[in-house]
Length: 218
Image (cartoon, rainbow, N blue to C red; front, side, top):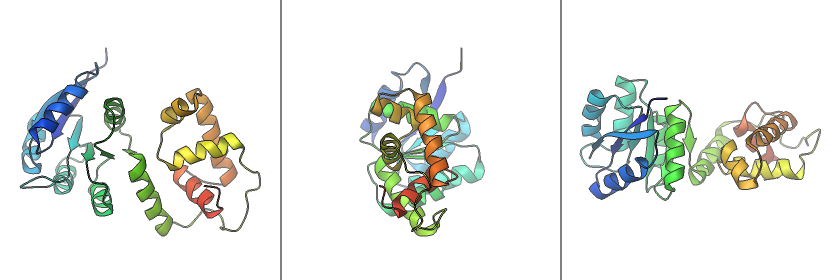
């Protein structure tokens, strides 16, 4: 049997910590290893507990979540931080990701979405919520050139289904989430994503979205 994912909850509101604990412990593969009420306390708790995932709030007294994430990653590069906050302000989003967080979610997510995010980050993946993903893609659009000239059309057009999948990628959905939304097998979604990358000449999902945006496809 696989070991449970150990989570450290960092939030200055006791009620929020208790609610998160209750939600996470409904999952058979997740346990809450400990709690901390500010960033400074989180550093000490991490040193003692060495959890698999740190669920980090942003605004807290003594030390905020961005600074705590930065220090955690500096002292323990293997630390995996998932920011969970009520704030989607651009400055918080980019500072949190620059500090080394692997995920950024808003607190309006469901318990299942939160559990999925914890599993993703524990496995070394990265995950950002849909509204946050739009901000990140917008920033990439300013910094990264499209893989092909903006005016050059695709050599082979996207099918209706491929465009539908691409729209959901642009919203920040993962393959399993797209499969659930469109009532498709995950393997089928993966094939659609592969086709999209080939047709857009993109190396990854972000470039495919940028390419499609430059052509007015999404």
